[in-house]
Length: 166
Image 1 (cartoon, rainbow, N blue to C red):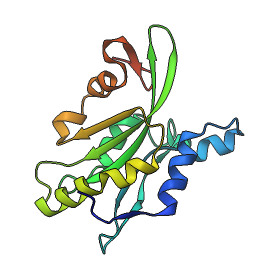
Image 2 (cartoon, rainbow, N blue to C red):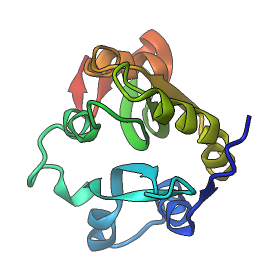
Image 3 (cartoon, rainbow, N blue to C red):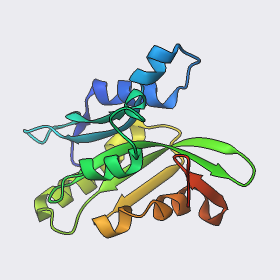
């Protein structure tokens, strides 16, 4: 069931910026988003970029030591969100980067919120072409452990995530 919710152009722009890894200057790379959250607008009609809920590549090593742990802390404990996380990981063969689309629907979010986010998920997913990994998360227990993300990315072949061994 579609909710009639539309996706704001800024959301699509953010996705495209994260997806396309142009060879760019160090300054541009630092401004690239490592992770970002999207929420519904107040009138519940649009999916928008959530103000202040992002991690920039340039923050890593400066104000952010553990980008994944920092991303998990951005998630609200009592409401739903959509997220994009640009995961950097290694398998035994190679280094990889993949975008992960996360649907955050914690157990204690209001039922109405869970329903509208669930029914609007397809609207945002259709705009995010080429996403290989989708993950629905229903609580901190599911997302806190980096090994769970590593499993989503490549099962037991992933040996490190964000430069840290698993």
